Image (cartoon, rainbow over all chains, first blue to last red; front, side, top):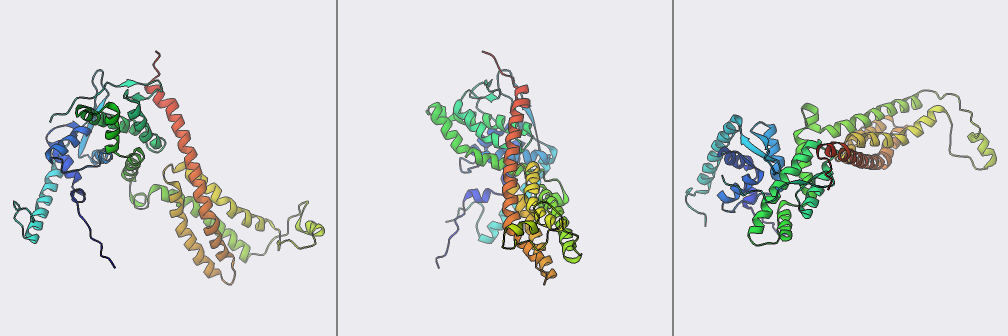
Length: 121
Length: 270
């Protein structure tokens, strides 16, 4: 029987960390949906591909959890735009998530025997 | 954080809804939001429409700056955003998950619990009827103008009616009507994935019927009833729920368009 190999991509690793990334971007200032993805793309140097349509349900979900708040930014002659801002609860959640992520990544490095600055061959 | 300026200024189309001024984009956004009407509150539909429009306009503007025509840029932006039906489903599923409240509802799903309560109620009632039919003596036969006895006088072969009492009529008619009525009610109250909810509700009930049927042996009514549920209740209940939910969504969409959106964004006269 032919053995199936499982290719793992950056998108697979992104799962579970999306909220951390969104909170980290909003920590630097309020912005709207496109602004978040624009910044995500810029900071990752286009390495991260985010399924665009999934952004808004996720943002609404985070808003329900009071990690972020949003309000309509209404300007004359322009369509109203929803701007998202991180809350205190969101800041705390981000810190917790970053701490967990740091522990996880350091453990991974220790297990695979890599230096954090070293690239796997 | 710098963000490119919006590509176009919003206007309102004659249809009474928001418009980006880009027909292709408007069509895409409408296809995305239309399936959500009647399933999620209207302000959520509106919010998704506006946010997605803003997002896509930024993408289009970016592609236009890279040298694409407006049409090609729109096509590329909507491709990147994904199929409108997928975007709608993604939004709907997340919304339903978020509003699953607590306890039993969160564990089993509101739709499943609703469907289960209707079909379970029908089941309990029918089990009582079956018990009466099996264990209690039948009452006197009904006299109607064309009773089996009178029909048999015309037809030489005996008809397959061992008796024709009120209990017999009810025990035959009731299980035939149940999937139509319960399925329809489920479709009215569960606008999203109603057939799935009916399927989830009926599975444990059918299992229960089999157990009950086995316990009633050598009387076979219980097992026949379980088989009847598989062959009739399940497909008819799911189909009726599907048709009913489809009709409900259409009605809600029509109502939403006719009232709320028209009120908020009244038609502009040229």
